Length: 137
Image 1 (cartoon, rainbow, N blue to C red):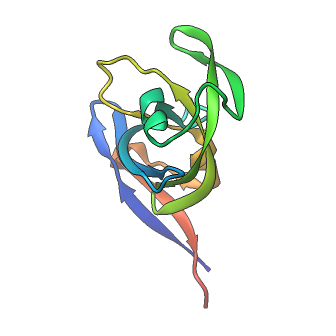
Image 2 (image 1 turned 90 degrees about the horizontal axis):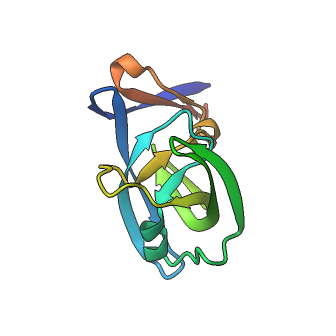
Image 3 (image 1 turned 180 degrees about the vertical axis):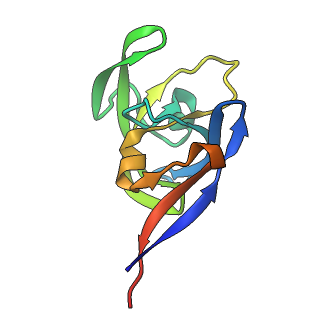
């Protein structure tokens, strides 16, 4: 049997944001604000946030090429020990490091990699995300 857990989002005009957290290798925990972005293939965090979690951006797991509003960019992808959002904690979660403009009010983007993993349903008009949860009988 399955049920849904509903998470309210904060609306800024047509944008939807939420809170998330990640842990560093030294036990550091950081909380941040993410924009829900269904056009982003990957979850993205500001480079300085990932550096504060102890991630080595000079020696990433890999580098990816992705398109942004400014064109095609190459960015490092690193793994955080854990990432938590929408009631889901994912161990060893890969995140793309990117330097967002200083005027941006979010710390990153919640991308389709995480939304798909959680089987998220987003009723935009209600400013919420619904996550399917299995229940044991």
